[in-house]
Length: 122
Length: 436
Image 1 (tube, each protein chain N blue to C red):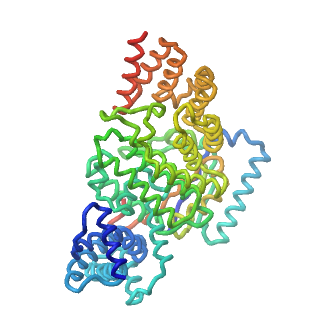
Image 2: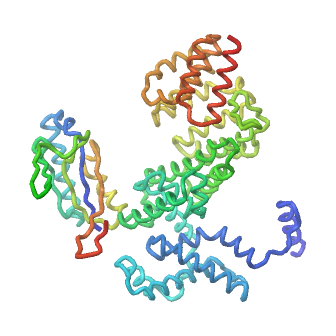
Image 3: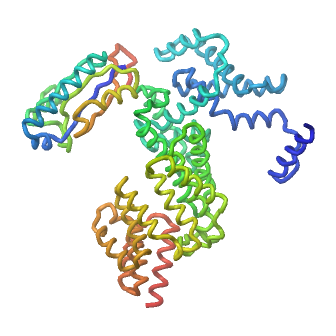
């Protein structure tokens, strides 16, 4: 099964880190991706720039509505994602435990569904 | 040999209070259903790759088939194996007839077809693992606690949806829907039918134990005697914990069993004939269940010897000190204070702090207790917790400071939720107002 692991943390806490601490956390992420790739679990993933850089778009009556920032003010913000291949939820949890920012924020694990011509799962 | 059988029969008759006529096949099947249904379901679940609906239907069909065939041919030597095998064939039949299988069911059908025609005689440990699989799946931490409770009572304990709904005071359709949604999540999210790997066990076991403890407390706090079904929940939780203990040796499983037995042992002394609550210090301790206390205390010792104590073992140790004391005054409050300190280090919470403060009051006097409680007064989580206000009221009362005590009882009454506790607080308040 495919699981999308959405990584969240409080950006303010990351801003408080020294450059060295931040680099070392990123180094850990590089190693984490290498490990997941080697195990055949890593399908895709990327870290995101901070929510300062976000734009939210809605389309209403065929017109785009564009606002600055993320769609909701929350304590923790989306910081990146990992698309993983795992046998089941238990394996997905075991893999996601190794995602370094899980120590600071949280990782939401969501099974991915397939787009189909009909009878799509809700 | 005949004498042995005769004696066993007499003892059985004695146990239920009258001599036993031989059981009819139907009665024996009912007994087998009670003892074996969750075992049969647990194994069918494994054969059907964790598909609850298929396994439940197959189990029901197997018992229906048993009712017909066993009355004619007699009960087989190994009823469980017969039921599992029959359930499996019933499911194969059903899947063959169904021409519109989704991918999931098609995969199960394929695997059932390729399995050997006769089930290999599985050893006892595989079958016991099936029961553990069922428990760990129903109590997976990816499921909400309400979902875990409902599914566990339904699938592991074999309670009907109606009984669970009645015990939790929710409408039957609400509970039925909760169970359906939970099964859907298990399937859609790929929650496997598996015993967790060793490294994941502590976190996974927490989810199981908190589920059992919630079931117990739901039955225990509803002690007003108005609802028999709710009291049954405590018994169900204890039974489930005993099962878990027999399947998986672990100190905290033993600790939780001890904790529940020790609390449950005091049930007879907790309320008077009108269903009013009696505080611990005023309870008639001869109404406590001594056999259960003795079992609970032995289990506490076992759990403590097994390694560093967890939160359930510590709470059980506290309950054991209370249970063994001849009266509130003669309780070892220093020991209780120390145990609360350990508990607070392991699992800090304002409620544990409050309990520790109560123990300090008993050890060092009401003034010392009030000083500890003053530190907690502004704690947000305790503002709406009636027991903080009630505890402060009680200490002011002991110090003879009636106006402060009255004011605290009034605060407690503003936030209390359960009816027996409200009545208790009102009586205390009325008594104080009369004397002052």
